[in-house]
Length: 492
Image 1 (cartoon, rainbow, N blue to C red):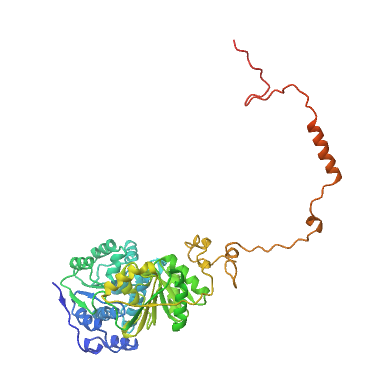
Image 2: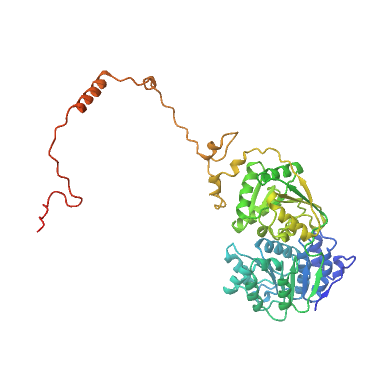
């Protein structure tokens, strides 16, 4: 049986009993007042209780477990260089590499004035630097399940002294098929430990997982399941499917958006849209599962620095992205799963800031729109959007030859495919070959006139045809296989 925490009306970080070194780091990070999830979760975690927390993105969830973890591990912090004095005492599991990297950045920022060490391990990059860091010893380890098991198998990660386990975005880990990996990891941990489970929603699978691995957890909910933030303005624009790219460009330009995440339902669609936006003058790039880890991290860093206007992403790639004060998100495709809509628009309007969630809906997406409205229990503002005439002709984006190349991610377009100015579709489909002009002799432009010699030849041929033909003896024909060499035997 779980308890439900009560939201404190007012709270400050000073009231939690955090160490001065932690409070100093919090202040340097720019935080002055805890969010509702922090106000509820920090005291419970400090008390050593298991937690089952439901919080939407952008609520300060990471600090709600990282701050009390650092506080609880401070008595065991050591300045010794010996790896034995720095075993893994807290393990934080995340579903994606991006989320793991962001959690690690927060932990490092909050623990920077302490002797505690932290590290992050995830797939898609070389294991050797990670292994070297683990061998030197870390108290707080942030990891994705698959890469953590790789290190366990290589004996570079020992989980025998873990005191605190965090399952961050547990619902997404289950959606991504990590349950077998989670079970393997949980079986490697000490039975006596504190477990913190955070999820956007409490589905049946999440409740079953909590009942199996959590002991008398305290339930903390700061928002109704599947609700959307009230400080996010949600607008749905009805547009034709073929006008969506032009609509995205128009919304970015008319609203003066310098940073926007654009969501697509497929990896191919994300790559295609990013290329189209680039051709229309919008600085854009795509992140999805087919990009390498380095490519995704570089794109995200460039987006945070303001060097990229539009970050085109799939749901899995964007899960856990934390962009401070992101002004807007655009749903190029309405998601097939209505719950993904809640996660998508949660990228904006974070930590109390305002934001816009702009969605494009074609006629064949009306069912998805109805599912979203049913989930969030309110109708959305639907408007008609008149799309200006695009710079490029529509057939350029739908050319058959491009569709055959969509699977080749990360390659530049073939030279000669782009056009400047208006031209016909045939000129786009065929490469332009400019041949050197050859001189033309007027003789070849005259009509045909027969010469006297050719007329005589025709008359002679006609006379020969009219003359009687002499009979000649029939020539023997070669047999199909034998030829003339062997005479036929007479039948007896």
